Length: 127
Image (cartoon, rainbow, N blue to C red; front, side, top):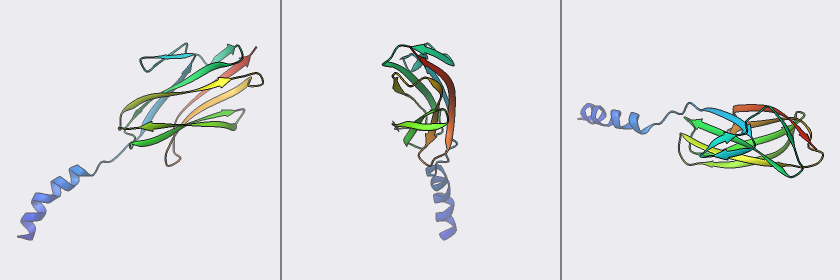
């Protein structure tokens, strides 16, 4: 009886256990249309108070949150938390660049557990 119950329940239990193999891409640009980045570049010359966007495509990510970590010259400047309602998802974050923000930047997509999923490096000159 126990063997029969295990034979019937085991496939159900295995299907109910979801394994996540997280992957992500991130691109930076001056806008987002239909979840795709526009004005993509690795070097931006912008006026003060201009937004630069980081658009990410996530697959195999455990639903919850990811963070976009914005760093200038290797030092973390800000972090944007993004909700991820399902394993495959597209979303974006932005940062407003002001006077004094010129430099080498990175936008890193980081999972809830701290694992880096994707990185985009870019140069900003604020005029």
